[in-house]
Amino acid sequence: MNYIVISPYYPQNFQQFTVELANKGITVLGIGQEPYDQLDQPLKNALTEYFRVENLENLDEVKRAVAFLFYKHGPIDRIESHNEYWLNQDAQLREQFNVTGPKPKDLKKTKFKSEMKKLFKRAGVPVVPGQIVKTLQAVDMAVSKIGLPLIAKPDNGVGAAGTYKLETTEDIEQFKQKWDKQTVYFFEKFVDSGQICTFDGLLDSKGNIVFSTTFDYAYTPLDLVLNHYENSYYIIKDMEPKLRQYGEAIIKTFGMKERFFHIEFFHNGDDYIAIEYNNRPAGAFTIDLYNFAHSIDLYRGYAAVVNGEPFPQSQVETQYGLVTARRSTSNYVYSEEELRVKYCDKLKAVKIMPKAFADLQGDIHYILTTPNRSEINQMIEDFGKK
Image (tube, rainbow, N blue to C red; front, top):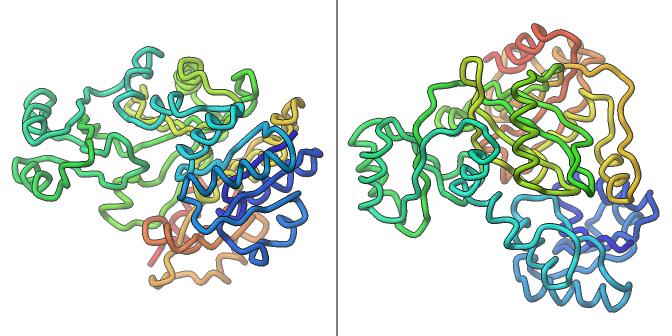
């Protein structure tokens, strides 16, 4: 099998996908813009060949790289980045070279919030009213139809980027002034819930869920943007049956295969409201959090799925798992050394966030596990206390 990895160097923790695919005897070919000498040695060892391009965003240049690797190594079986930024390009390359996996037409339902909502409804999962906004007149129509307060998000966007909370007529006018009139927006009724949770996991080549989990955000993505909080989120040991029911219904309706998924919900009282479907793993160091909390290796598990093998299930009881962040510019009550002593074997890893995401999510991410839910709150308080 020939497997092309797009951007094998970045993000750095995703290099392990390449290593584990190679460990399965798969021929892994990399296309990236970093010089070969910059690659970490385990990544170099795992790659059969690395093709450096000047600009990974230049689709024609990347197509020429794939064509060269096709000519040299034979037909390509997979092309993947696992990275939101490259998903559309991945799909275009698959279509060009007839490679298994989502093509551009398949991404419409996972790129646009308006399209996601249609499928959530088809799956029988609760959603809030929403409307596409392309013109100033459409802004007024959406406000009149849905009512304030509203959340305005780019219809094709990731996370909380470009998001506005609209509560008053003044907010509406400010949005109209700031909006570039080119970006298509999606207006939704604001949900008064500070709880956002997820249904995340991995699908095999037939679309069956082979791994699933859930985590709660300590703060909503919108709160992180508006209030500059330190990011914290934590794995829940036991998933509520209704959340699992909704998640499985969504997976069946969207019909993806051999992919990670990351679905966000509002937890609203005793029910859930679907927010968005992400056709890739949760970002930053979340896969590492899954691995520590579930005593599993999802990099190796993914490679097994690609290779047509059964997914290796964990035989160890799941722990609560936490990622909590700190900012290099903030002064905290407890030093890192003090927290290392206090949490000792519960502190599993310390990760440095790439600068591109540090402003939103914090500079240093700490991964911890514990068998006790109450200790998660204490950990968040200790690491965040100023």
